[in-house]
Image 1 (spheres, rainbow, N blue to C red):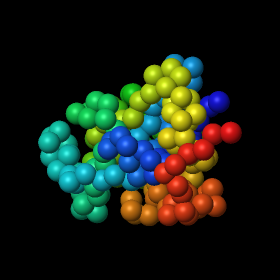
Image 2 (image 1 turned 90 degrees about the vertical axis):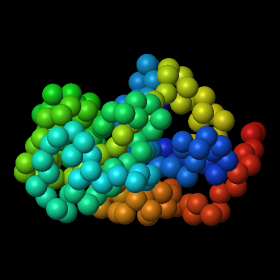
Image 3 (image 1 turned 180 degrees about the vertical axis):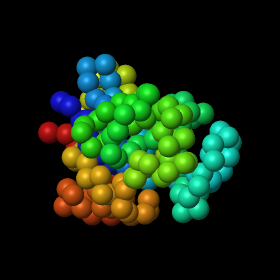
Image 4 (image 1 turned 180 degrees about the horizontal axis):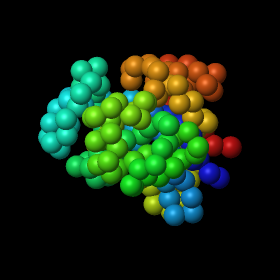
Length: 183
């Protein structure tokens, strides 16, 4: 199983407050584990405030008003930029030809100076799973999975993203039960 470039949709019974009602984009999944960012949980910080804290000028007033996201409970003091196009940055995890997850300062400098890359979601922290951990959580019915549609991340407001991902499965979140059955 490889869930790279998939969404994880937290099931209603998810009791971990870090992940309850979240939509997580998986940037890497292999035999060593999985890594992703939560894409529907903005925090009380704008990009303008973040750029000010790291001493990078942000020229675009529109970008300055965008929210920073809680990407997950791992390394919450570190920034991660999910972006397209993928481009060439110092510290990028290229998910595929169109999207990457970057944690180096050069991407922030480019975004601040000329607004590139064109589509970004900036988070503090990420979600990580050790080898076999995500697979175990899937067996416990903690998550639904669906191939990712990047327009959900880059074109929709955060409050609409979870429902849009559910619709990819043809399911309404309100119809899900928090009780799982096993055959």
